[in-house]
Image 1 (spheres, rainbow, N blue to C red):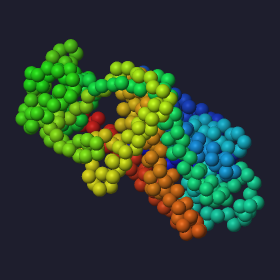
Image 2 (image 1 turned 90 degrees about the horizontal axis):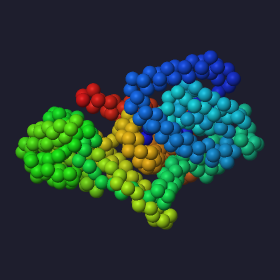
Image 3 (image 1 turned 120 degrees about the vertical axis):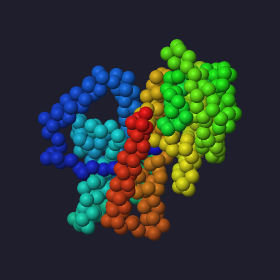
Image 4 (image 1 turned 90 degrees about the vertical axis):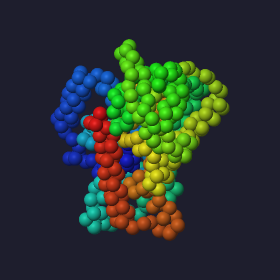
Length: 423
């Protein structure tokens, strides 16, 4: 799932009185540095993975917001703030009437475009106040750079909203082409080393741990993950003995596979499972031509898109498999996956970032209030009805959507963290 619930989310235009004082900004920097230093000292590995996650997320958010920002400027809209991260602001620099900010909460970003529905306007909407300024001059008399979102044509408004996801797609495509043509297409395989153990499964109950290497099932040794999986599935529900290597010592654990649902090419099938996931690894890279790199990049992006829409379709019909529920996650799960990729080198992280960029673009195009897709939906209404939707009602819809999105983010974060406590 996306970690950037409101890419075009606005914040009230900061005035001189509203801007944080240097003392408060310094306080936030000191607090952030103190917490980061403590985390790095006591949990160095987790701190490194967190830093990689924040770096990847910040780049994707910057790319997304840059699309909104650039098209808004080309359309002559007034931009109040360009920010990576959410407040409190720990850094702000004002240039040409725009505040460029970094927030203390690295969970998203925002481009505050005048008239696009800032928190200030949402509050006014909730109290039934008029959003329009009756003394505001007509759109024809508003100079470029000072126009509100509604002052521009429908095409410019659509492109300003669509530009965020578009930049995410272009970024992913550029990464894929660059890596595949300059370094090569990764040639990989799956090992027999356990990457993760799912909670409340035969493997977790028997004591299998991440990092264990599976050597044999019922005495049949193999270094191929497919043969290990076939041996488990051949048991068809009877107890099996799994031989594994841990800390240079062989252990033998008994467990009984259970029927589990897995997604195979979009089809849900039930197979005997013990609840583990093997590590994959890259054996090397094979260079390809620019044209082939573009083709492979398209195939990769299409595969991610197909998988995401498949999960969304099964979720809409309440037909999610157990593997779907395990694989879907929020910021915590994404951080864990990026952290595991960082142990394999910077190239896997870069390819992971490209996949997440496609994910972020697609999620923001969903026709849900407060997302880019939800705002575009209202532009579609205007196109068909030949008049804009009531701004007060639209503001209420986006406000309700934002509340639901935040609630969902809390739920999915709880879903990610709960297995840690169970473990």
